[in-house]
Length: 81
Image 1 (cartoon, one colour):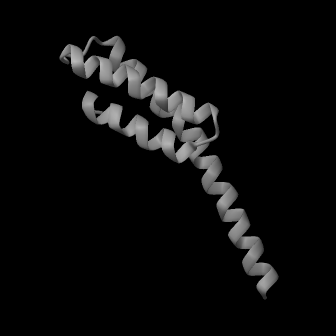
Image 2 (cartoon, rainbow, N blue to C red; image 1 turned 135 degrees about the vertical axis):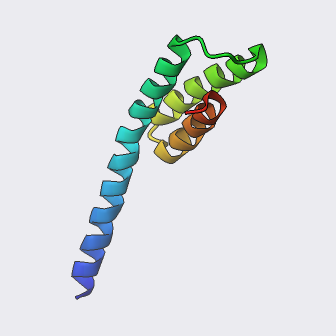
């Protein structure tokens, strides 16, 4: 019974990590699409969004998907998406 529980736990962990990995590029595409529409943001907000977008991509490439999702969410909040 323990082997089954451990196997299930590991499968769920891998599935959630994969889900975050695929979530990051989708969020980056949403940010890019919103930015291409020239949103009405202050220069400071625009700089912050660009920084958060770049940081989110860097986290994604480093395999830090939760950090990437969290960072990209901040950019999306500023953009109102």
